[in-house]
Amino acid sequence: MTPGHIVGISVTLLVIVALSLYSGRKVKSAADFASGGGKTGSLIVAGAIMGTLVGGSSTVGTAQLAYEYGLSAWWFTLGGGLACLILAVEFVKPFRKTGESTLVGIISREYGATSGMLASILSSIGTFINIISQMIAATAVIAVIFPSLGTLPALIIAAVLMALYVIFGGVKAAGSVGILKLILLYVAMIGSGIIVLFLSHGFTPLSDAIHTIERTSASSGNYVHYFSLFSRGIGKDLGAALSLVFGVITTQTYAQAIFAGKSDQAARKGALISACMIPPIGIGGILVGLYMRTHFPPESGMIAKNALTHFILEYMPAPLAGVVLATLLIAVVGTGAGLALGISTIVSNDIVKKVTHKIDDPKKNLVFCRVCIIVILAVAVVLSNGSLGDMILNFAFMSMGLRGAVVFVPLLDALWIKGRIDKKFVIASIIISPLCVLVFGVAKLVPFDSLFVGIAAGLVICGFGFALGTRKIHRLHAKAK
Image 1 (cartoon, rainbow, N blue to C red):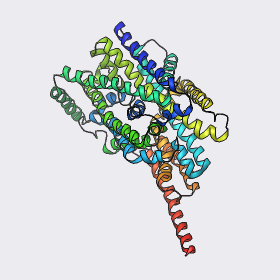
Image 2 (cartoon, rainbow, N blue to C red):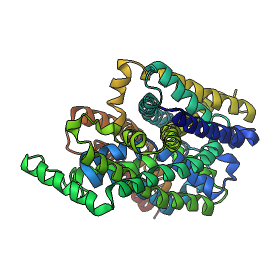
Image 3 (cartoon, helix red, strand yellow):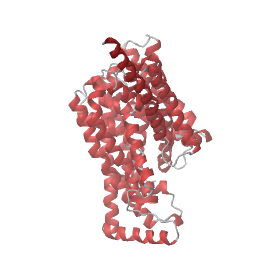
Image 4 (cartoon, helix red, strand yellow):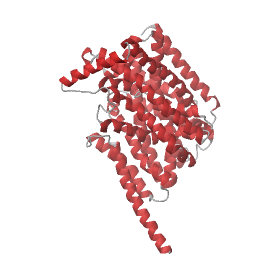
């Protein structure tokens, strides 16, 4: 690290923090904090979605996967764009029509307090695991910036940045900072891709070098088709995209951005902007991954996860490299911060308010939400430190599956099959579906994402409940005649 790097990093982080503080100047209540008072424009909605969805997986993770498998690394950002498109087309109006502020609230309204409480706790646990994984990912970027810093100080820095990202302005801060973050990410990732093409003298020489690697890998019996979207297998790559769709639809943070829109049109437009803006970010990461694979093969000692940060330090001017490194850090921090905001809203609205009226006052509720975020991040620091953090990280890939399994099927039922399923079947689905994800995921009993086992279990349970409910309605109609 040179003084130029430090200047670039410092300026970028200061601008991000200042924007977050500025966004919070008009936040006076928990409603403003959680949903912007329902007066948020489409750009802020888009910023809130992308500020959380576009994180380490879209940048560092994409370059890492491209280094190993090529074009199939695009599925995270392609899946994110597809998820936002489905959110815009199918879910904006139904979500907002309910008048609820949380997804769990929609379920609880239809199927009772028990189902709502169970869904709140289980979905929050799944989301919390993902916060831990984001915190650990943030320490990997911090380690590049401050190599001599220990793990615990790095975790504390990550937690402080996450808190500053949303604690003052809530969803408005997440949206405003998300817009700036997206602009910086475009400069970082698309700029990196352009630098790759410049260094390679165009795409054709880079493509030829990759084809050479393909032929070498084929002769060694370890063939990878780097220019296939399904180089890891159709089941695995499509499964990754679908798990993103399920995860986005069932995560409170993204729904919160939809609820924050000042109108259905603003919310839908924000989701559509996200759908268009997310996929191109992956292209830069893919080009970097391919370039680093040709110039720094595994035999050179290159670790795949370091491909992007190594490229930035090696090939970018120091001040710009500092800006990009700070942007990558904020990309990871923003995802963790947005998830913490989602948990605090669920805890406040769907758990604490159900058992006490002590935080009904808007100002008290605002203080509670902010304190809740601090507590969540503090606990995450403790659990992320040492060997326990590594163990939790092994379960992080299932966190989206756990959230999806808990919420997806009951949410669809509450939105589109009202009054047709007895609540005991929904409660059974909320309990059994995530258990299926855990059991099948840990034991590796299926060759695809265990999320789909959990979703299938929920569909079977609630489908059985729907069939019994339909028969009951027919009997009542027959008696009436």
